[in-house]
Length: 315
Image 1: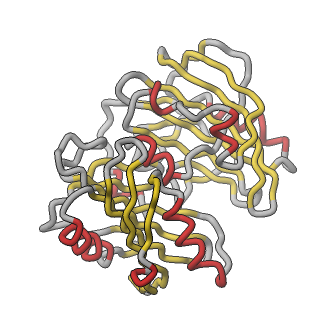
Image 2: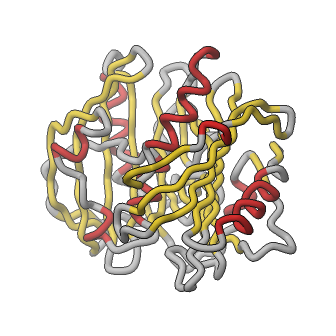
Image 3: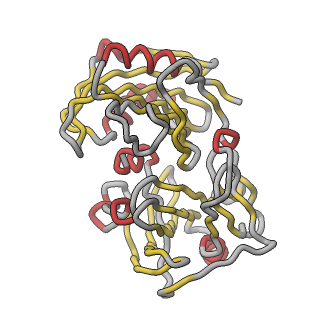
């Protein structure tokens, strides 16, 4: 499940190293809570709460800081956070340092990436324990190096309050209706909603059916939308993924057009054959993605996925 989530999030946005072995932070009056999360940090001057992800952004530069909580042990979540693993994401690793952050094992990474015609500097602070992993990502165009220290200082001010009660559904820009279905809300990760049969992530149920809804800010050219949808499902962690060309259909939900794709493939971690369902709805500045997976009752669960996907609404 951790690997699947990481793949969907497109996860490895990165972080920078800085030569401090042990870091401890305390919440102050300057700390701001990131809506729908248990994270607090001191945003840099000129940064405002983001509307499309959990974090802060500076509109004129395109710089951002985002947070996520990953439902899995630190040791598992950091697999692939090395030069070969990051390279598969188009990311060049420049530095990696082991640290202790608020008493937890941690890593601080420095990296670069070229995307959408811009060279970016990226930073990732990741820390956690045997139960969960917490991540703070910072990104800014290399042409504005004056943001470097501000973003790193903001990231390193982060405080996570595990006992805090939050409503993650209120922080996203969309909704779906799972009433009268077997799906239960489990967790929100960087603005992506995860549903399982028992409401736990990772699930403890024998029925490992899952349903995920999220938003990507990647710009897609009109003539490449169908190809983008096909490539997106192929990036999921499956081998021998088979897509029925007859089941790639144009679809419109909540006034947004896109593509619905159904396939089958072998889960890379278990080798189990699974049904994979995907809907991508394209907006002017990105797309919404809906993914359902199951290892049993393919026909019945496909009907479930289609039914729930069609309840999608923007707020």
